[in-house]
Image (cartoon, rainbow, N blue to C red; front, side, top):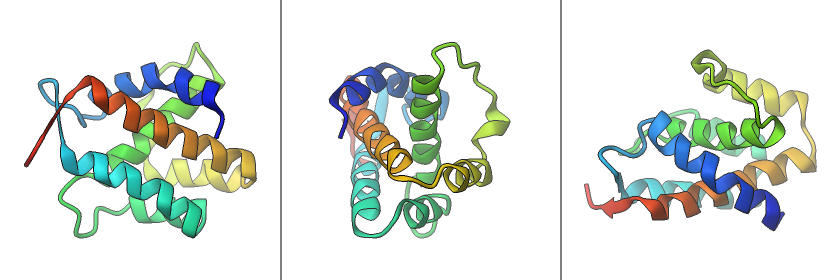
Length: 131
């Protein structure tokens, strides 16, 4: 874990909450918080590729895990380029998976883990509500 990267990622993660409709009217369902915690465990227990593949599919989840994946990727993109201009087409799960395949190393794994922590911390700026 890179504490500076986690801290620097909180503001972009907060932007991503609204950008990807995770936060609605200043509120986030508690299920999102649980899902973002699941991402870190999935990376640790499995691999980054398997965690991203899992989050790319909604499955039986009551929340859009894909939106959390997009939020993490947004945090990474902003961290790599402060002047990053959002383009929604870059946030398709296949594009995120391609990014991981092109950059299949421990540094990318750490970036996603740190981004997931930034997203989880950014959720504190919103009211957590039950569904």
